[in-house]
Image (tube, rainbow, N blue to C red; front, side, top):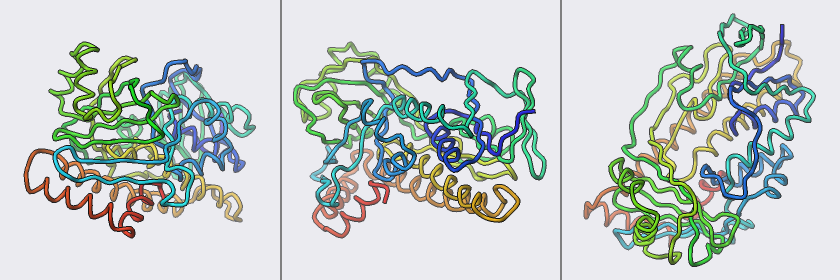
Length: 392
């Protein structure tokens, strides 16, 4: 029978980060994933990118993967500019305002995963099992028992579900969720622009949703995330490349000059999910399995990494204690309470921002115009908002 202290189901960025942190603390960990672990970074940029905060960067530095991520492909940004198309409101952030070299990095998710997998392959206490499915999961008071699809049994002291927004493990253990449809689809694509991005992350709030231009590791190349109504998203996807380029430039008010889409365009529906339970005895949820959030502030990946960072810290401290039990319930409850509270705060904040910036209501236009400019001109408030964005 295969044994491990921790079994992680899901080898996305969050699951792999947790695995590496635990392995470096000397904890035996197994990662299961039904997909292949072979990742090749193509010359073309991937469509799935994340805006990593300084807190996420710090975590990756501690785990020894940050330099490899930077060496592979990443783009820092020193400025962030946000404005409302329908009002006079705008706000900007500059790294120099926070005594830091940059505000964050735009990184392809596959670059992050590749760097984590390379490090994990060198950890004696980590086992990666790709193209592997589980058949059954049961738990007792002290252990979790898994039967793999090939019939192999496995026992672990803790099972962590990092298996995505539609988590099968969450459903298996009947952990209820609260959810609502944001009534938005996010269109993602890679574009080249006439003007260089100058290491600036830009976002404009349109009446039907935000449009973000995120700088990539070529000076005239951006990743766009356009959150809009499902009907509008369908129309945008149906446009020819030439028509889409013109529409994109017009909606962004030509801030970066002429636009040219250089990739496929993809769209996915946006849904808020929040699990009411993150813990069932020896089973815990993490990342998208526990929460999903609107991408308008680029917080999704960073929230999941904060989940991983806390559990790494809590379990690593436990290995240094004299307690015989690994991952005692009080530690798992601390993880659940702390991370649920933070996720709740950010979900409420995103819902408030989405509601405030939607539509053509003249009162809302006035409020957001005054509000953005007020924050932009009041240093204490701006510092507060900026530090939140940096993950501090």
